[in-house]
Length: 356
Image (cartoon, rainbow, N blue to C red):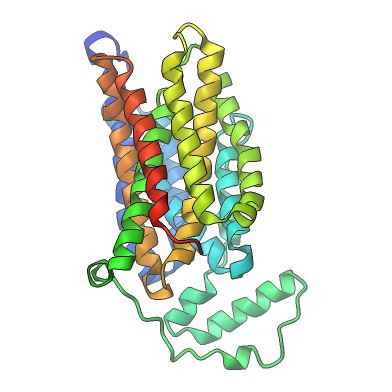
């Protein structure tokens, strides 16, 4: 679109529009999932991303490109919010960290230019049995539980299905629970700020990929593949170190890696890329911890609301990352200082959180 000279800042505008779409997707598909189910709330966003990703590449002008990117962001925000919840609701508490980290692992693989998402896989998604029970659809929930047990070659304990009572619908609490409970408020604010800061930094680094001195495609490949072992290790370390220590360590190390960029000359592209990659690895790792933590830190009646509000906080962080990158116009160190400092502060606030 010939975005050069006085129009160069429009590149940051396009990134901001994408992040705004992600935020709107979280706001839209959070309540949508509660009313119409997790399955539809993951399938529809996949269709949106499939259609408008292609439309972005075929856009004849910049304004249609912005509209397409906004709709892609809506799809991404809705899918990312509900995919983790849908996956963990089908997995027992003992395997919750495993399910959440595998979802994050798929996202890391999807960043690689060697791999592409297959939207047809969304047809294989099953509705959440927990959501069905919460809506009083006991028969459908029992049918899916039986189907999953058959697929996994498991035997359902005798009398298990008979104990399921569809009349006991879940009691939902909204954001008012934060006002009534100081403990919930403290935990959510600490976790929400962690989500905000890690996404601000993560996307700030990701959207600045062209300025690290190496090939954009090579750097993006390194970014995606380097996060794969991190997510695999996080499955194990979450159980060994616990949620609290894992969250604090990943945020503190990630933020320190980002601040260390200031000590490296800009012409040392390899060293800068190594530090940026390390920062992204630990911050992405922190995101996996947050996804598990929010499922265990809050009661069932408030869990979906907490996950939704936390996702909104994270998307606000992503939305602010392009404007923060634009501060480099005044001094190139300003974005790096903000990214690293906020990550370290949020990691320090992890002291306020209890272990689960």
